[in-house]
Length: 575
Image: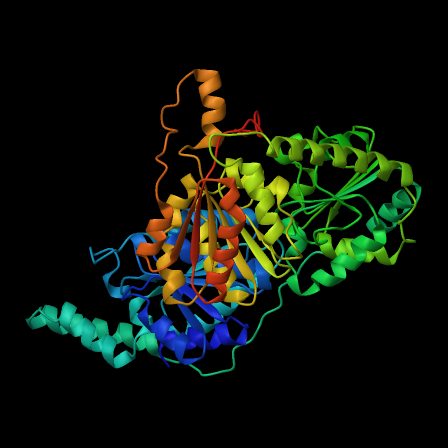
């Protein structure tokens, strides 16, 4: 068996349905072998998009996402996306092609020390030099990607492990066959020995799925949390992306949260978990709630910059911090109870031990809802303000009004996308994708490729700022070629607005923050998609409906919406 077939066998056994890639001779047998085994090959326009697409699939399905890239610049082009997956705790497997084993370090095409570059960014990195080791290495990589705190893994596969042994012998004969005499004879002998070691003793066997262990809460920790839950008067539950790792159990998680009945705030990939209209979910004034709470449960949400490094939580509150990463349970703020466990499993187990909380905290809920309503009314009033072009809040309100129940939102941008997060409600679990705490721009095209491939029934939207759109608009070519009817809504204000707003005020200079109001819709048309432009609010609904109709016919769409400037997010920059 060649290496490409072995890799395909392992991926099929693990339920992998997609490989995202940008082609290269170093990895061609992986793509061909996987295609023959029924795995869909989706080729994109930049290697970073391949990893972003794999990341999206991992988040939406719980099955590791897989990307394959060629050697050298193919690998280095993935670095930001791999780091983003690491910080987002996404189980992603990246295959990197490499120069033939006998030519490493001798100046062959695209030959660099890839392991030194990638190793700091991944949970596990391995370079395979013998065919008989390949299956086991890939199986281990997929296990490590899923266990404990999930994350990316990297397997380097030299090109001579992927092709048939006879072809490899011919390749080496051409590359190294010029020497004569004793040197030539010695070289031929060494090559023969090397190939015997490389291809020898390969045993065919069924691929196995190794267990991926996750930490579970102790009975003592659950008992302490249940005791505090029984006596609290002002509880708050905050969920992070880590709660969504086991995607197959998401409905059970929803049931547990509803039984707990605590006021709940959702962040990251957990947005949408409780639907668009849950009576216990809150979206605004989280800091005020945390300052007044007497019980706070952080479920997969560390005390980082989003929580003021823990300082926004009342010092008198009983703080339960649950995380798969033991270090994150005590990051920046020592909790009353640190629980090293999968947060979703913890919440399900806690719900089994308590009486339903609904109706216990009427006065507390009433105050939170009053503040929620006040903030919603304030946003509504700001949406009515006149701007030079379309008020971005009003644009988001229109989008909120047309989104179907089966929709999936990809967030890629700064100011406009953060504005959308206040206004647009994901319709259900696993319906929101954002980069995570790394704050990476450029995820949009790749995330949408993975999302539309993994969930073809959903109406997939990219919410782009005009700055972030420039990173991945070329993936419209991918959408067209692979029949992925993504709709992109670009909030175009001719600015890196999130930076400009504070920079101009503080430093009185807009240097580096000015963009053109580019015709992004024409760019999408050039790649074979459908483009719409909007400059007036009166046209917004008609254009959004037309975009949805075009997507239903199988075409990707870009809506280029000219938006004006507001002070809605003044003072929101993070550094």
